[in-house]
Image 1 (cartoon, protein in one colour):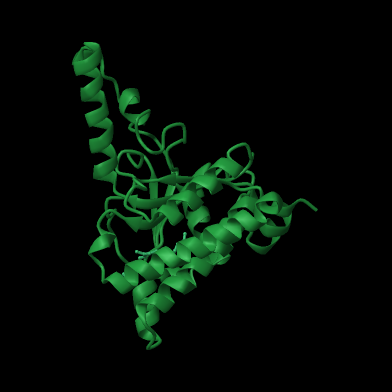
Image 2 (cartoon, protein in one colour; image 1 turned 90 degrees about the vertical axis):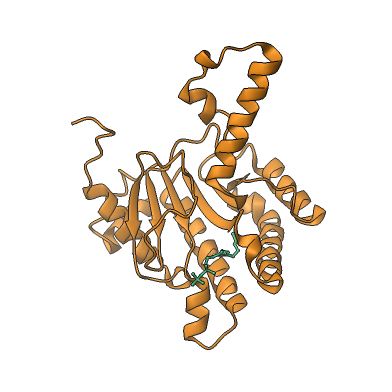
Length: 248
Ligand code: FPP
């Protein structure tokens, strides 16, 4: 039985033949999840990393084309050193496992963000993961690392300004497409659905340019408690919306 039929029987309200092409997730609420259990924040991130594994695997199973997750923002460096280091350790662990399972999972991986401030080891792991998986077809998982929407747009604009100066290109020739093509997400379609768990209702510098016409789904569930069923609810809600992209 095709996998989407099996899943559809469990959750009738989701039409698995009409999935959004690209889902993006702000993995929020790890700290509060840990606090409620009297655990250190780092335990919340560890639980969040597990949820990410489950959701990424499931997205591949149901045939989603793109999943983008916000793992570490340009602002997250302000957190205590211990917390930053624990997130980096979780990433390293995840990437090592992903490389190990790559042939079996065949998930294409990409990274959005400036990886320069990461340790050489982590940068090398990101590069290796990207390189090994670049020919895989099916689901592409984009991990946003040291990512900020404003930073991403600033870089694109800076690059264009340099081109205008060096190549004598006229600023009048700059079109929206020129910006899109210089973002970390170049070549990836804009997210159709952006999910933010944990009850916070803001974008937090996530995919600012790409989210112009994205549908948002907010839930109070904390990221470590987010499940396939929660994903079904988000997709079902998305499927009830009427997307007009500024038209009627
Ligand atoms: C936001 O929750 C979460 C983060 C800043 C880190 C997300 C990182 C992971 C899920 C682990 C590593 C990722 C991968 C891809 C393996 P918060 O800490 O702001 O939660 P709070 O608002 O409840 O404090």
